[in-house]
Length: 236
Image (cartoon, rainbow, N blue to C red; front, side, top):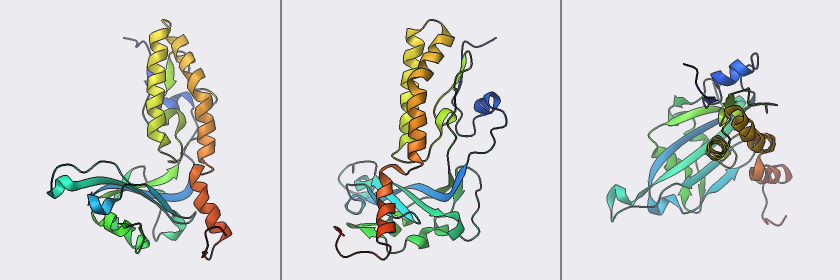
């Protein structure tokens, strides 16, 4: 039986996208490796803030995702999300590898020895992790078209982008809302998918390209370039 619509929601290596755009090839890579994971850390050591530290050669992003629970023990712990990035050229034996590949924390933790900010210790957070995943920092070139008749793309299949500002997950959720609204308000399925693309694709193309400029994280890169030896007065 032929479906009413086909929605490619199958990620950065989307089979639906590949069928619609044969010959596109692998996602382009900027040469950075990203390690990501989640740790359970005592609330008093987790902080109540997000920090982005480092520069264009080495970076750490750390922030708590939950509030502490009950009165003691593990209930007082919080989940802390972390993402670290370095150029593959500075990692022994590094390669592009597969998307979302499990790796031991020990592979990269030593690069972040001594990184502590307002009481939040990156080594301590990493030591509390059950595991880690390694990603090449890749995205996709913007498409001139998502929708072909009653087939369309959504999320990373449509607009995979660098992980700046949590836009990968957030924009996929917004896509889903926009697609549901279009399907609910357009009886003709092809017209619904066209309306969905008309609303979402221009903004996502702009965001994909903007994220290649590092978004708000460009500030730490500028600081490194302007004061590679550090500074004593931030106003400098």
